[in-house]
Length: 192
Image 1 (tube, rainbow, N blue to C red):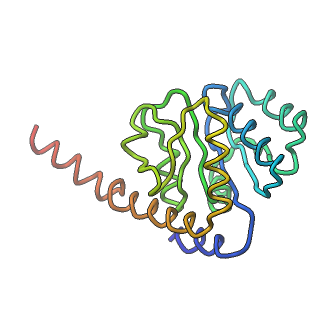
Image 2 (tube, helix red, strand yellow):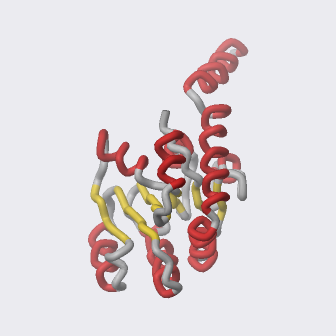
């Protein structure tokens, strides 16, 4: 199970690790994440953000991390799959996806399956997946100040992070497990 790994990691007095694992594109909120990181750095928070993926804004992201002097806290990990992807999820605490446009992003369910709350934007089906304050937060995709506030919340409230992590894992098991989806689609098929 992924739960003990994630929850045990949080019991250690470590900085919070945020994970962005999606297409590296401006519409996915990468600029806002860097602006939030800048705010947190200026307030002397210790944290880590790992960016994973590929896309048209990859070179901009790499250059901007250095240009804004964020390279002590923010890294670009490249495209990840298999064991490396698993490692990135296991080493994270919170998933970031402040995207402008999404339908039903699988990244959120993956994050939940690893016991990670998610900070995302209220677009597409996301408001139906994330319960604010229970298993993550919803922020407007352009509101980097509120994004920073929610990231800081997790840094300042490890007990809440722990609670929301358990809630995220339970939600994916109760609502999105393979067995649950099989039952839902089986029921739909029977009715048709």
